[in-house]
Image 1 (tube, one colour):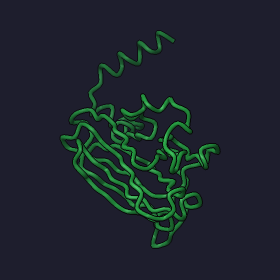
Image 2 (cartoon, rainbow, N blue to C red):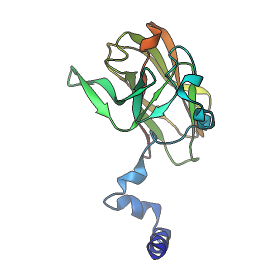
Image 3 (cartoon, rainbow, N blue to C red):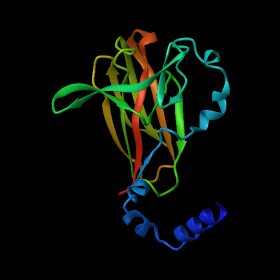
Amino acid sequence: MVADALYTVLYLGTRSTRELEELPDGVALKRRPIGGFFPLEAASLYFPQTQFFSSPHWGHARSGVVLAEGKRALPLKLQVEEGGDHTEKVFSNGISAGMGRTLTFLLPTGVYTRFRVLAGLHPELGALGKVEFTVSGDGKVLGSAVVGGSEPAHIFECELSGISQLQLTLSPKGGEAKSNYAIWADPVLLKQ
């Protein structure tokens, strides 16, 4: 195992980034999902679920699932618009999060140029909710949209040049507070 690790390190060390991007799986270097990244706020997330906020009390950030009533893990699902029709789609990469909480991700300087994410409410759990999704970079708003529970997810495409911190924020905007099951689906950092 040590020999394999050493070989890999030496192999990668002798190749330029451009050569690695041209390999068959080099797309991984140009497109990086952040659904499994730990936000700066992750240090606070060791508390039990019920220790967070009360409306909805189950809303702290989770990667890859949404918790129904804080207990039952369900897949991340959103309504999306495809060819003029609304359809439900399940996502393996994504984050479910609660209202009023900002998730902050540190970005390597000068590496990624764009951020893309679908933002919406879970079709069943969030049908009566309404949430404002805000994407910010270094504290400056890059994009914002209000999405209701019966609406398709909003697609954000944001420029990241010169940005070192990416923030994702959710705010309630009416509707039933306990239905604000908000999801950031397929969040990816992209190189040019």
